[in-house]
Amino acid sequence: MSLPETEERDHFGTPSFRVRGRIFAQLSAAAEEKRAVLKLSPADQAALIAFDPQTFSSIPQWGKHGWTYARLDSVDPALFRDALIKSWRQVAPKTLVAAFGAANR
Image 1 (cartoon, rainbow, N blue to C red):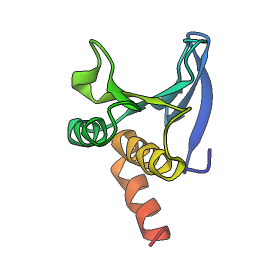
Image 2 (image 1 turned 60 degrees about the horizontal axis):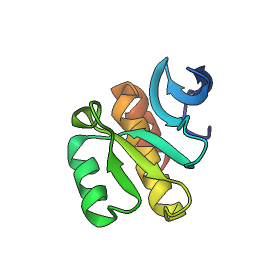
Image 3 (image 1 turned 90 degrees about the vertical axis):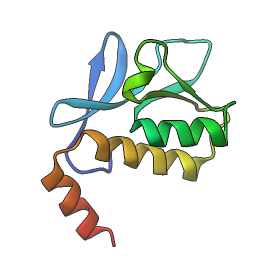
Image 4 (image 1 turned 30 degrees about the vertical axis):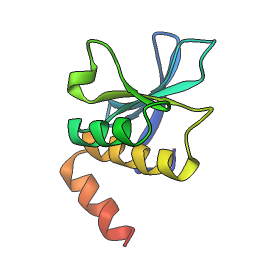
């Protein structure tokens, strides 16, 4: 919620996080597994899966578009924060990303 213009909204019964109406993260609906869904670039997705395949995985049918699962019980908090910011940057308008980058140097 600390990223610019982020809002939480329901998405089929689970919390989703959006910037200007576009989803960049969502908590999974699977009660037995605590995981988040992130919208990453295919390159970032591939790098995270290669680095930690126990924690990160591609979502069937949507993975080719960068949608990635992150297991919350095993992810390193700093790595998750970095991935979450990348996810936000992936869907936020370029002007908003530029303003965020300038304010966080």
